[in-house]
Length: 100
Image 1: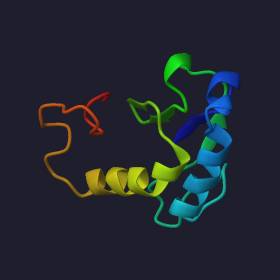
Image 2 (image 1 turned 60 degrees about the vertical axis):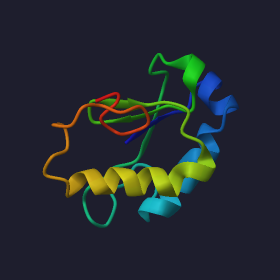
Image 3 (image 1 turned 135 degrees about the vertical axis):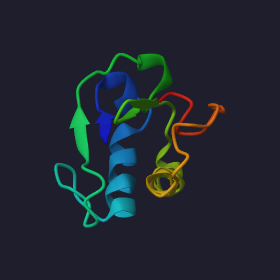
């Protein structure tokens, strides 16, 4: 899970988002979650500056991820790990499949 920390995203809360993701996943940036499913890292600009904070997960770009939504965001991502139909559904705005 890559969180943009460049100026546009930083001004929109990417540092607070990273802090909340660390709590939600129970791991520090640069480390992997205890379940082995997520690695958190800060990255430089991922070229989606108008929609920050932006989080890149696998092939999916998630825009406007607010710090207060970090727990729900990680729960949504965790749910995709056990969903055998993930990636086979028609994308719906606001779901992980939308940008994937």
